[in-house]
Length: 194
Image 1: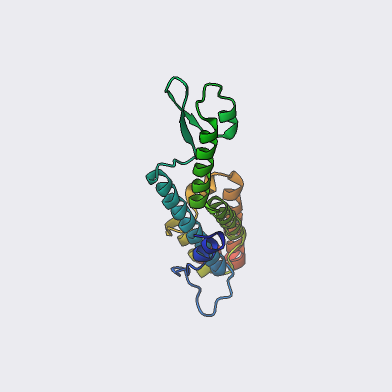
Image 2: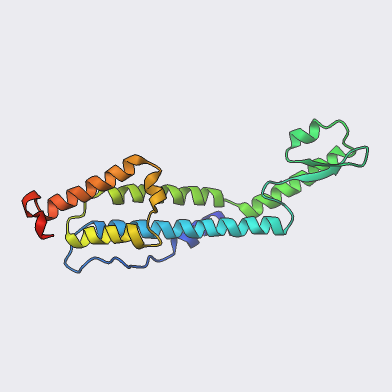
């Protein structure tokens, strides 16, 4: 799949909606949930594609890192991953053949792998940005607060407890957003009714 085609194919995945906003709700948390869900699904597809390409490399005998096996003067095989390694081997019987073989392996590896590592990295960055936006925004309605908590606790596309635990600031940010939502939904004296 070509570089642009990978991004296009992965971005065409339509987000599903399990935490949809009530018709009259202007609570921005619903849009933030859907933005994170969409980004998570794109990342998941990119990771799946990277795995498929890695399996292709292994099935073709190329390996996850391109290499070439040459034979030295004694008939022993030597594995080379770089041209510098080939040049540094004085016992190599046919260095020109080793260079050509390594070039072929590198070319085939590049043709299969393409830009998938960049696609995964970019998609991961978007997920992180949307995750931080999601946990930083205090819901403005009880429905929004419930949707946020339900998404984080139960949805397969949601951030995991590991995502929160990676950075203690994220847990504090989420707690402050929940506190802000409670302050907005029900001032301190009225919280008993929630």
